[in-house]
Amino acid sequence: MEHLLVALSLPWCIAGSSIPDHLKAPADQDLLFTRPIPSGNATPIWPHDVPGERPGAIGSQSTWCTFPDVPVSKCGNLNVGNITIPTITPYLVPGADSAMVIAPGGGYQFLATDREGTDIAAWLNSIGVSAFLLEYRVPGRDWLPFGAAALMDAQRAMGLVRQMSGVGDTVALNKSKVGFIGFSAGAHLSGHLNVEWQNRSYARVDAADDESCRPDFSIMVYPWRSVSQPPVNEPLSGASSLNVTNNTPPTMLVQTEDDPVHVENSLFYWLALKQHAVAAELHLYPRGNHGYGRCTVSGDPWNDVCTWPDRAVSFLRTLGVAPNGSIAVVI
Image 1 (cartoon, rainbow, N blue to C red):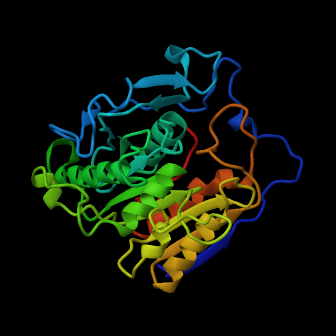
Image 2 (image 1 turned 60 degrees about the vertical axis):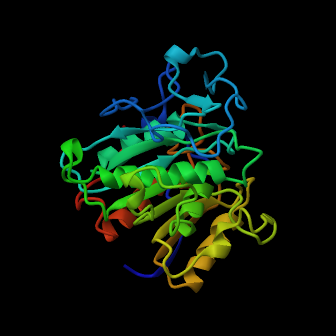
């Protein structure tokens, strides 16, 4: 693939046009996709004690709907908070040789598990890629460095997925085709994992930790707090772009100019990749704000950034990850 690609995506629709009909949800639904059925139960990633935890310091896990007038039982846009037992949930494509671990966002305070989780699993499955939804620990632990708990969980999850290669329902999985995709804080986590894979940030637990936790490829969608340059001004402890090397995985970044957490996160992260000759794609769009996921939530405005999954399919195909002929679809 081309090592350096900047894609300044241009509008495809006439200014002022309405949201396409296929993006309009029925009035009684708040998502345009059917939540996929997982291929197995959510599995705790730590078999015993969770490293870095303080028992009783975090409240009980809770789940709520983004829309306050929609009960959880009928909600297709769920959020989860106070996670103390992180899990991975498989969404498998039979015979698929590639997979991605998904990290939803939520400012390291909660996880947007549908908009940036199950919906992304559905999309990945539709293009022939298996998915593992990671529900990492939130909120951030005040007694640990910024993002440290989430990084431990991401490193552990990557090893666990690779350990599944050649076994059972993942018999076709190629452990050299395991990537990571994150949104907002999850994109910060993706960028963090990109540069912190050489050594585990916790003591070895079992054989899963003997597997590499380096993503073979990475996608960062509207990253947050990832660079040191203004106006982000993230210190070294959080600005993962400062640690990019020529061994950082191939990475695609997506963001809009009007993102309140600042498009410079993607710009300067991409620049760090460029300076180290890492295969990278940067897709910038004029509008979209933040937290749009795949633009499947009813009421979301249609913007050009909503086409980013099509760009991602091309990126994954170029890397030999998405099967040729796979088409990104809204499902």
